[in-house]
Length: 197
Image 1: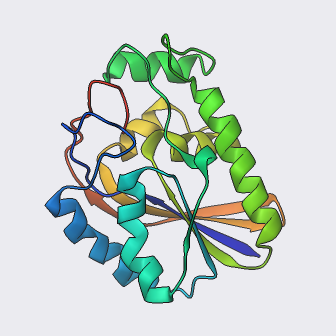
Image 2: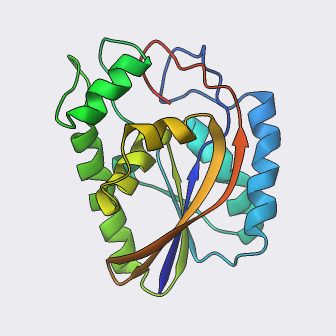
């Protein structure tokens, strides 16, 4: 069995303009200790991550604890957003039509396609191992929807305030077996003008 722990990042500085370099708040950095505390009980073979600063910061102390490099995969990044903003009407529109995207942005399906492709490659090269993937709210939700079509907008909104959030997906080869929620810290989601979480 291959065990994959997805770690949605801790609380970021929502006012930070550049999505890729948006760091964690001081409170978010403190919450990364809870991520490390959890993983100290779970030996980890490999660590992958989105290239975005907030995701890397969330798992950095865990990687250091295990003496592991963080393997960055561009495909694991968050949804590219165009014009439109981050509000419930847009969330519902994107989840109702997974091919919809605003100008310059990505649809849920586009995010799902590249994230699942990255995951499948990770599963191929880590059979029988335990790995961490540092991720984002929409990126993770698109993966969960791929394996469980019942995961829809309401499910996404359920976890929107969970930063950080750790969920385990277990696989036999590339075949999905089950998922288990382990840890979350509830923070008030404020969003940003670009529509990224």
